[in-house]
Amino acid sequence: MFKHLCFPSGVRLGLAALLCIAVLPPAYGAPPPLAAEFAQEVTPHLDPPPVERANYATQLRQALATAGTEITTPQFVLLVDRSPMVQAALLYWGANGQGWDFVGAAPVSTGLPGRFEHFTTPLGVYAHTLVNPDFRAEGTKNKLGFRGYGSKGMRIYDLGWVKAPRGWGDGAMGVLRLQMHATDPDHGAQRLGTAQSEGCIRIPEELNNFLDRRGVLDEDYERALASGANLWVMRADRIPTGSPGRYIVVVDSERSTRPDWSPLPARR
Image 1 (cartoon, rainbow, N blue to C red):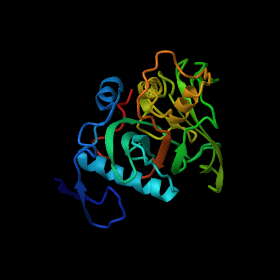
Image 2: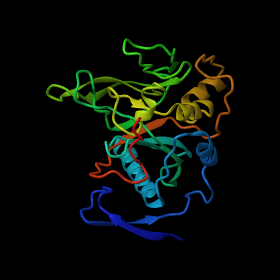
Image 3: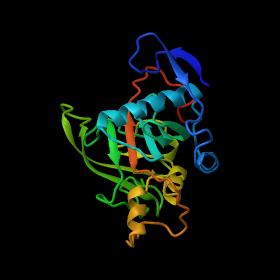
Image 4: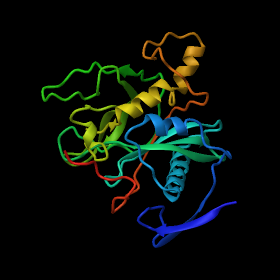
């Protein structure tokens, strides 16, 4: 059984006026793994309504298809909407051809163009693998007193060198070291939900801890551990999920207005 919901085309799927989609029940007949844990452990988190969850699941399928990425075994995928009107990460669990279930969402900060060395976070599907090993934040401050990677011990998810639009000069394509990481808990965390970074994806420390401790995106790392590898970056208190993934997908919903479920951060 399913029902149809209609909503204005401010949520873009390539249709011009009114868009109707089928909102399906959970693809696997039960709440997806870690949904309850996400709601309990990740603060702040966002609660997009069912129609939005289904819309982003469609965008996820389209992005994977465009990239030629086949996912045949149910696993986690993190979807990031870089739209300045959204700035959110949405965690899904599923597989191609079987559907994608929403797990949870949280505010992020992606690239803010307009200054030298500031890139627009590039669209696409990025694999988190040992080709570009992760590392951990030292908690040190830059000359402005900003801890760019967040508190000491936060994990930096390294996605390697990628092509990205320069946010300065002629806007031509350049090369960015794309990473996903926490941000300064005193000066950056309260800005999550708005574009702020030099091109990387900034996430809440609580989301960083959740992904890290539960091995949500650690498929490649888990395979290496099972083969006897000694990976210093893996934390001792891990409770790894049984269905880890490896993909971070960046899309742009191109919204013209901000949805209620992803509000601007409170001013301080």
